[in-house]
Every structure is written in C-alpha cells, then in structure tokens.
Length: 222
Image (cartoon, rainbow, N blue to C red; front, side, top):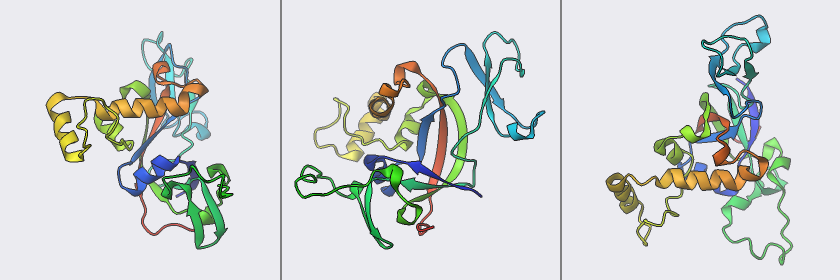
C-alpha cells in the first residue's frame, strides 16, 4: 500500500466530508485527444516497469497492438493505495489547524489579516482527510454518466429548471420525471472552471483518470 498527496478545492473538500463526492477525474496529459482509442492496460511486457500502465493506440490500427501506442501510469495509485488530501489551511501546530473550506465567508479575510496557506504547501501532519482508492480507470471526459457526475460531488442547485426552494428530494424527483442532466451540467461547469484555461476543457474531451475512493475515518496525521 502506497500513500500519495492529492489536491482538492474547498467545495470539493466539503463534498467529501458530506459524503457526496466519491470520484475524481484528472486529465491525462500524455494522451492525445484525437486519432487514438483505448488500448487497454499493460498486464505484462518487455519492460517490467510498464506493467500496470494504461495505453491508447492509433485509430488506424485495425487491432490492438503495441505499434504506435502511448502509455501512462496513473499518478494516483491503484486500488488499496491511499490519498491524503491537501487543502487550503492555516497550520498552527499539531491538533490545531484551521481549514478554509469550513468557513463560507472569506470576504473579510484581508481586512482581518487572515493569510491562508495554499493547499500545495500542506504538510502531511496537518491533513484531516485520507482516502482509499477503490478503483482506477481511464476514459474520455464526455463519457461521464449522470450517476458518475453525481458521485463527483454535484451541488444540485444550478440547473434553471430546479424548484426555487432547492429541496433535494424534490430535485431528485424532478430529475426522474424529466431526465434533466442536473449533475452532468454542474460537473461540466465545475470542470471548465478548473481546466479550461489549462487547455483541457469539456469541449476538448480529454482522456481522464477516473479515481473512485472512500474516506477512511480516523486516519489523519501521518
């Protein structure tokens, strides 16, 4: 079992804490977005280090083969591995850490001299969330299902056809009646807010790592 850090924004941290988020998608930068199709996982090969890598192969290949394939290993591990969450915070000492995600109003942070530490700089001992990887797969971003979009931590709140009171049970009932893609629309908006400027927007339809996870209660300080 290996343990690796992973970054999450404040809203996604809250979604994990509330049990709404059990999946995350991250762009596979090595895979081209056009002219290739899924080639499978490498079980064994000439290089022992290639075992466990995902591959895509040129569309021109009429059968799966190694010729022209592109390989990539998932940086988030394999089932059974753990991910410790890095989030924006203020670390005073062990047992005394403030997390930005716990505070809804940050409008007066500057006025009060509050200086949050970016998530990338979080040390392991300050972590409060540890996740166990349940499954890993590679797919095109646009292939996400409505159910998987929900597992990405949808807020159930931005679709214009939703009831004004935003009652979750009413929203779910409306979804069942209209098949409105509530979760998918929210996920697409969230994805573009993070990845569009990086060149991996929804319309690009990049290959992504799909990491399914579960929270490990009580596993915090390393």
